[in-house]
Amino acid sequence: MMRTARKLLTPTRTFVRRLNLHEYQSAALMAEKGVNVPFGIPAHTVQEAVEAAAKIGDEEVVIKSQILAGGRGLGTFSNGFKGGVHVIKSSQVAEYADKMLGGTLITKQSGPAGKPVNTLLLAKKMTFVSEKYFAIMLDRATMGPLIIACSEGGTSIEDLAASHPEKIIKVPIDIQTGITDAQAAEVVAGLQVKGDKVAAAGQIKALYKLFSERDCTMVEVNPLAEDAEGNLIAADAKIGFDDNAFFRQSEVFEKRDISQEDPREVAAAKWDLNYVGLDGNIGCMVNGAGLAMATMDIIAAYGGKPANFLDVGGSAKVDQITAAFKIISEDKAVKAILVNIFGGIMKCDVIAEGVVQATKEVGLKIPLIVRLEGTNVKKGKEIIAASGLNIISAVDLDDAAQKACASL
Image 1 (cartoon, helix red, strand yellow):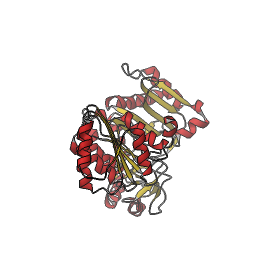
Image 2: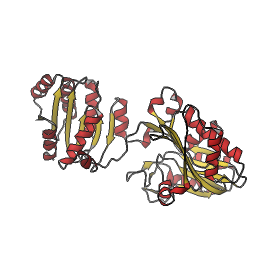
Image 3: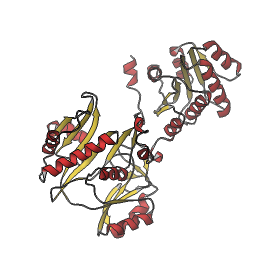
Image 4: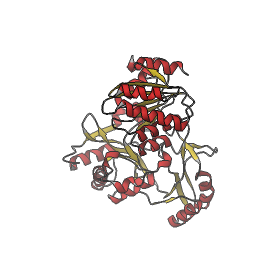
């Protein structure tokens, strides 16, 4: 029943521990490792965009919106302007930059709210004879890096995988050994490179070097293009990093663009809380990821819809609990809040103090259901009872979920 209920959840974002960079930032990291990338200049203002085009010095340039979502070329701005990527005359840069900068670009991957465009990439227009797909990802099945390549690229790899799976090759890499000459040659063959195959293999190795030395979770190039001289060029760039690599890659993490992220998740991260926004109306504050998933499942099983996943962890302090409560209550879609705590390391009285403090500070007007069990549960319930606040107590998880759903 729980597995069925979970299918009812529709996350607005998928929770993953990683940093994503913009295309221009990713291209710069690739270039550091010897990967061929088109010449490009980021611009944050219309004037900077005009100056970048002048520096490129060609009659035509490519102007690209920089957002952390795919499908930019087919996207639409909230102001009605079509397309987040254009090949235009250099004389048109001011006109296009004015329409794109400061706007919100909506793509099939951005969600209906879209993403703000605060940066443009002005890139040299290049002529390619073929476009391919290349990626390196961490693969659970092989327990290491996996290279995914295809001789056709520049479009949705998911659609191609469904229609022509035989065109996609997968090459697992031993993390201890690294990529071998034979494996690089296998990838080049799968890409159907027409030019210098030794040079192409060098590009594949350079991309793997980036993946390995920068602690990446993903390096994706779509398209990895071949020009008329047979050179492989990373015509697009997307790189992800695991948050656990921060201590080794601090200069990379300084490039983080929080304007592209859910502000609630940004606020939660500052307090070392795990938060993911969902599309329901019952806010959840739980300790432990497993209990949080069970709480969301049972809410869905009783006909409700969770508004978030929020795990306060096992050692949160009163100020963290207060912060978590505020983050949930500030979501206008939330019509009720369910606090479900099973005290172990996390003590029920600490949670109770945080809930009472936050309720008073926020001036909560919506129903609040609290279920406490475990360490110091008696003391926790006494704190809530003595608060004089209108808090609905629950004896167990079923009771809490039913009361939360009934309160809407």
